[in-house]
Length: 257
Image 1 (tube, rainbow, N blue to C red):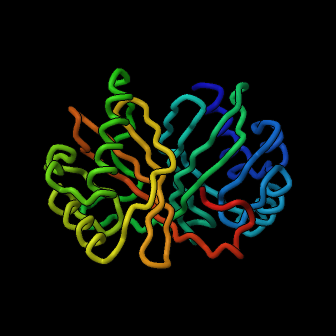
Image 2 (image 1 turned 90 degrees about the horizontal axis):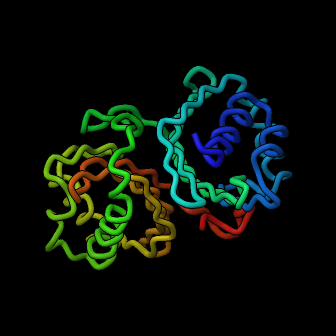
């Protein structure tokens, strides 16, 4: 485990799971802590004022970091949370930026309710966890960026089959396995006026690539984390989290991006 991943895990597991909020934020963040999570103010004080009451409201906290990906100064974690014996279940996708000492200085997240097995038979968190093909990191990042640019932004499906495997394993809520179901969902969304506004961050490690983007439909906007696993240049497994972006007046910080 690298020290930057150790800091990301520590903030989650020591600070939130174990309830040592003040100790964790002091131990794992750098000179600044810029926050993009809805409802949480910037800095140490913002983290403490949000999570200390959270700990009181939720005395039973089961938190599992299912996947972790590192790329340069960035760390991504894919997390399952069960609160109060399953009273609330969440899936979070978090991206952390670290400083030259590997301490956390900025945080973005998208939170979704855990919904159990979907039409594909999979949940939002099960599936492959092993990082492989480290020598393919940059090629896989470039492949996903092309897919998002050509298909999600430019609405060009002529090479869709080149990007997505026929037997795609799907973890997105409400979607079945397979390339056909994925293509139909994207086309339905685009026909309804949904467009990918921009890709804010894209990182990767080996066979996994993470993208953080914004999609809009008229006046509504959502923040979207996609986690893609690739093999032989094609997307073979997919997870996602989507969160509606609150009105500007409700932001406690500078916003989701």
